[in-house]
Image 1 (spheres, rainbow, N blue to C red):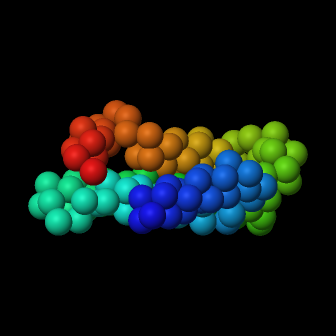
Image 2 (image 1 turned 30 degrees about the vertical axis):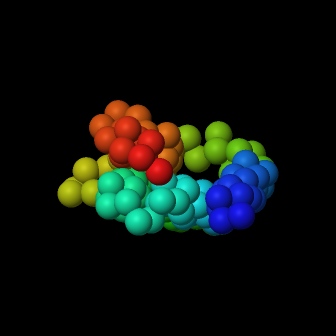
Amino acid sequence: PRFFCYLSIFTFFMLMLVTGDNFIQLFLGWEGVGLASYLLINFWFTRIQANKAAIKAMLINRVGDFGLALGIMGCFTIFQTVDFSTIFACASAFSEPHHYFLFCNMGFHAITVICILVFIGAVGKSAQIGLHTWLPDAMEG
């Protein structure tokens, strides 16, 4: 019963993630999927390797979570909303060069920075480009 409970939690949060119409709902589903993944990897909690693999997966996923959170904050800073339909409708108006973020006295185009941060989030969650080291260990669970 415990495995199917964890699997149901994972399914609930995955549905929340993919059906969300704003970044807040997406992020809650995103974090829930991460938590449910931890629980599923650590299903055999008496095995030391399963514990280590679950902790490793959770820590590496935090990199992606941090990137996504910064991307959401950037979206809210630029668009003053987290609603997808509003952001997509306004995105072309914010593509002009005078919308930028300053970092170390260098200006970076706001839309580019937001896209890179959301991409970092996707890379972390999908175990790509350097953030993949947790995936082989996760098969322990």
